[in-house]
Image (cartoon, rainbow, N blue to C red; front, side, top):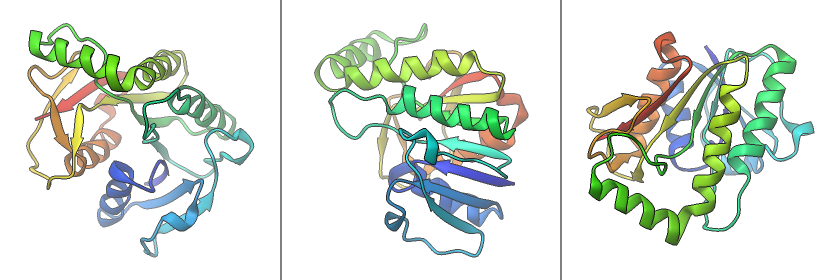
Length: 207
């Protein structure tokens, strides 16, 4: 599979690229700073592009897109909503249907325990209100698109090693799940990408 990845210069995106290459996929990274991609592999290509500059966003030749772009600070952001919209517009123009997009698990879910609900409200109010709001905009937008989409909602991410064991929930939160490592999230993204059963689903993943 040829996968175009946005958000591959740090965190989960970087780990996803390495894992996809290990599994034999061809990967194209589109990055605002291509020099930040330090990995080298015969099946890896890197080109300059900015999700907020639609004229630089291209996915031609891809079988699938992985969108792992998100804010790194607390301030206002449109990386989920506008960035995701620009990528999906490019997919529509260039005939690419499959996308896995990562948002966050900060929205309230039916199965949230009271501690989870209180923790999310605190995090949203103090730290990530803008990121939560913008992520929900992307989720609403992606549902309107004629694409084979999957949305993955992780909780707080850690730099721990992959455990290979985690829980998922479709259309709901993972009950009591508040953590997952970036390594395991990257592994799940690849699994979801290859699984047609995840199409048109919003999936939470956590320990």
